[in-house]
Image (cartoon, rainbow, N blue to C red):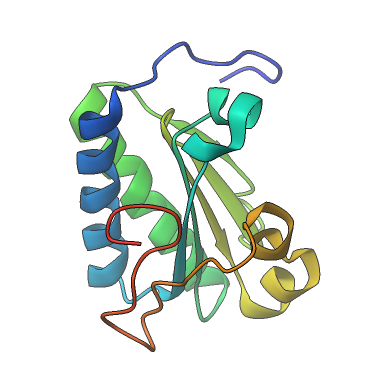
Length: 143
């Protein structure tokens, strides 16, 4: 994917909800840590970029890369095209652009430094954490 060029693919609500659920299964199977889902639907103009943002942590560079590759393979199997992936060579922070669902995978210290949850979250949002299973997902899908 060329920089500055946005794919036009964006799914309707129930489709993006299903894609999100599949992604969360893949991340859970890959033992991602501290999963947070942020619904971008309620943010007005910002929601034009995606319906959901998923933030997860890996335990090492290799784990971060593996989680990102699993997500990219999932979306390729669903869409028939490879998603945009940025940051894979270093694996400190990898972004996988699935169109209606955007995934950020971090090493823990990099995640703490950039604090995307703090930047994008609405006050009073809730987390869906792998350490705290059963907690509602932030801003949608049970939250």
